[in-house]
Image (tube, rainbow, N blue to C red; front, side, top):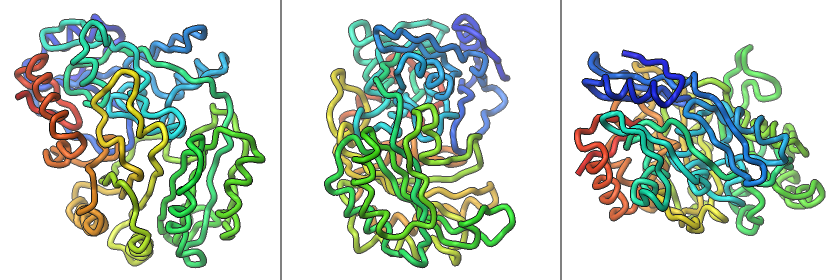
Length: 412
């Protein structure tokens, strides 16, 4: 049964009526799995209000708000949220998973900037969760996902950002097969004000593929820099010297930050996996390019994100986000269907296997799959002691496992 809700009372009524698992309809990049016939699906798309407190540099964000709702509300005040690469994603679900956005190396995880969370737990109880009132639950919600109830809204901190020097450099990997290694070496001494990523994708020679990437194996470097255009130009000089096909890096309003990654603005059927790594082995990067070219068994985007900076520092109020000492995230992503899923999973496993022995774990926000996500992958997102603590808090607030999160943590 689906409940379209418009306020906290509606959410409470929906939870009280549940005789089976409860899930929340969220926006995002990936595939979702259906509930069984006894479950309740709570659709929060009618709860999109955003209220900005400019003096306090905060925003109250309702459950169904997307990042572009928050960006649009904050921009007139010279402020910005710690939003992700795609503003069409739901702000709450993104933040509960941690949140690595375009300002990440300067300001940290989105979860680090949460001040208060309103949560409906089992039995329809509405709780205002703060670091002083319920410190354990406040810790768990910020990084532990939607395992503990239905969030109806959250108060988040905003940052004084109005513009970026950002965009994409696009390369033909047939001409610059060393791009991933060059990007990796370039990241060694960039400032925290620069958040970047690199990806590789083979475009088919089909009419829907745009020029100049049609029929090419393309590398893209995504740039988001909080500094002047001159300083940005100086930083990018080594990458521009490699000869990009297209250079779309420029000064932009933060309200246009979606151009940095240029991702589809609606959820699609993707399967994705990732590994968090302390460092990269440059000798292995060329294999990622070769194995995702035109001869790959399925279309696959392989991407690397530069972490570190503020992401590596503990927030003022600790939370459950794991593996802050990771320096890079290696991700693989493929458009797929249920029928194609086994082959896509096998390809992703093959791409990640050479790196797995040195992996610290995984990031929940970069996992997409059909069906139950492997429990070992969920565990790997946290330090062992933190995972045990999450299970204990789950047992306190949801002992029967009523709430069905995308990445389930069992009560125990």
